[in-house]
Image (tube, rainbow, N blue to C red):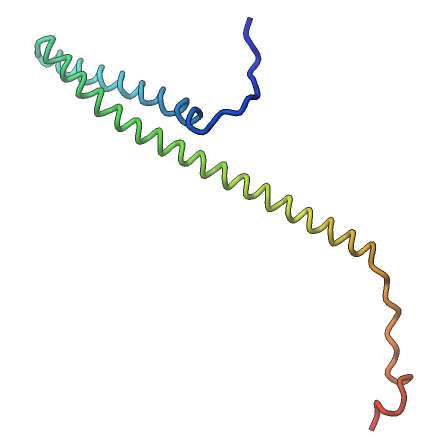
Amino acid sequence: MSNPPTSEPVDQRTGVQAIVEPIKALGALLGFAIGFLASYRSGADMTGSVIHGLVGALLLCGIFWMGAVWLVREMMISHVQEQRLLYEARVEESLKAHAAREQARATPLPPPVPRVTLGPGGRS
């Protein structure tokens, strides 16, 4: 029986690690496999092949880590931009509602008085 996902908040470090760590592990495995197989198939002994595999794992682990951090950074930027757009829409909606309330509450002004009825001081 599977448990439903909980809605508990996850801190930022745990969330980033959940994305970065599997990508780093994939890079390390892929790097080891490439380094080991390339060395072993070219005729190196087992020790040399393992060392080449470890070097390949270190190199690709670092490269995949940089890619994962870049991916997380882009996801965060996208999320911030999305939240900013939602916030701006809510602010605009709130300002329109406030203006409508103020307009409904305002007392209508009487029509303007024509200048002719103001008296003789207005004409020369």
